Amino acid sequence: MKKIVQEVYSSNEIKKSIFLGFLLPYTNFVTKMQKLKDEHPKAVHFVYAYRIYEDGKVVERFSDDGEPKGSSGMPVLNVLRGRDLVDCAAIVVRYFGGTLLGVGGLVRAYTQSVVDCIKEAEKSLLLDEFLLEESCEICCQYTLLGKVEYLAKKLALRMEKKTFEADGVVIVLMGERKGLDIFRQEFSTMQFNLKGE
Image (cartoon, rainbow, N blue to C red; front, top):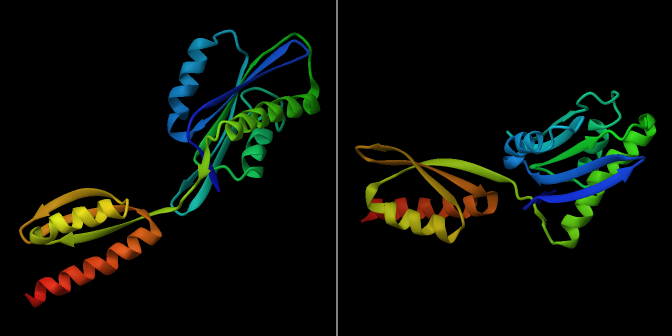
């Protein structure tokens, strides 16, 4: 799976209809959609699709935004699926040019908008491997906190101190599975050595 790290843009004109394509990280989706609606008040359709990784599975959504059913949102989603993109969103803004394109024409136009965005992202090296992240929760004695923070940083794990208790602090660690596995092993050794002192 791949993800996009920065927004890319495409523009196509088909029979006087203008299609503006945007491919962006999913975290920016809601803000970008509102911004596009503010910037393009005369546009007729704001078609979108996104794929996100959530709770161990890929979640997908799309909208035709008033276009004929199956002519726009699903083709956009199919492009994202076909390129195995995740944690990303595609939005296509359409200005109607006065000529009906038919369902086939709409499918081609919306598909092309997203394909052009992906080509631009590839050319600009803006697609990265999507790495599955996990989390684990530990209770760390205060005497080990400095070592735990150092180890988490060394393994590129994010750390959140959740609650402070009498005998230690509850910490949530997030990152790649490999890093978490190494952390668990080394943390067990730290605890064992602490008990042996």
